[in-house]
Image 1 (cartoon, helix red, strand yellow):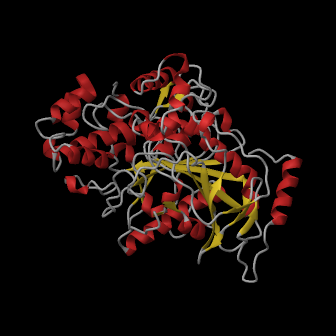
Image 2: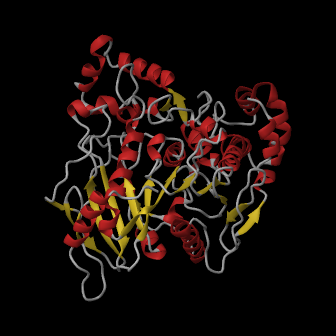
Length: 526
């Protein structure tokens, strides 16, 4: 981790000195001076919260599709008791579209009481396919309080506003990623003001946030900004077979070349009536809702071949070019159940016993018969579950563990699988008949309250949540995940992937490669 310059260290000492002192109960200050504002936050029963903190200039006007601009230094007062708006998207947490482009805000959740030693800082990048979500959707009070860490949740530009690429545009294809990196710069500059350690910053994210976290490890911009990474359902090597996101959708990976990104951007600009030398000015003149409506084209098009991502992150990891920091990485046992369930709700005929051979052929070509032998219809409750199982193993689990072994050549890596049962149907697709136990994103309520609500169902799930938080936050403290009374977590190596599986009442080390038929998938050419 970088060491602070003398000038910045002096500034942060001054900042810390300007913060309101702890009260007589030992509670930390709720008035904190940062480099960009003097924040007036709030205290709850278990935490201090500083909400809706601006970390970059509003990306509006000429800054629409420009790299995020740092804020000027300021001591002006800023209310920090309410979250900022979500970045523009078709359906925010409230269910209504969000169209406010002035959205580059973050939230800092700190333990209620101060400590003598500076605390680890954990920066959360949310999921949502690079098209939906916000930092405020994730209430981090449990994690901050139980783990004695400072948690920062971040908004970043989404959809067309976050990932548009056009020839000659500075920062093309990387605007949302650049926002995430700018949030880290702000955190590194201001961690000490909240009692945090700028030399102990863990970035963690799920789904799209996990893909961005993994990509960060291959970015030259990450140097000096991150000390550890936790990648949840989002490795650099994910490879979604054709039809697995939705029947008819081509094979997808988390990242695309800049040329492919720019091709998508040019096609969408043309759809919006913007062409020629003035295409960017034309797009900047359009209302934001016209851009939000095109957001679906910009899922999984984070561009490489750029200043921030010179190389395909998957190749960079395989080539040993990732930042050598400790990594906590894994996913859910039945990731694809949520996507297949969603497809069936949209079209009940999307996956049937009759369509299963066609789906396999479209996804795996000449290897379809071999896949059918390994995932026979008679071995599963339904064709939908058979298809979900095959595509989970092919697209999520096995690529994740391959990626983890590659990362282990550079630094300590700890691999996990979330496999609890009776999980909350966070995607709202259970009516499809596809079980949602350990489906994509069902692990998130174990770490966060969602939109302020604890959606765990049983005491056993709450016990598991406390243990999972203990593992994750101890990793943030020391680089080694540990939890009192819970199993020791063995490290992944370049040849072996012992996986700690999280199930209520039964945390144990498993052979996930065998569980997900990874010898088969790792040898299969697609």
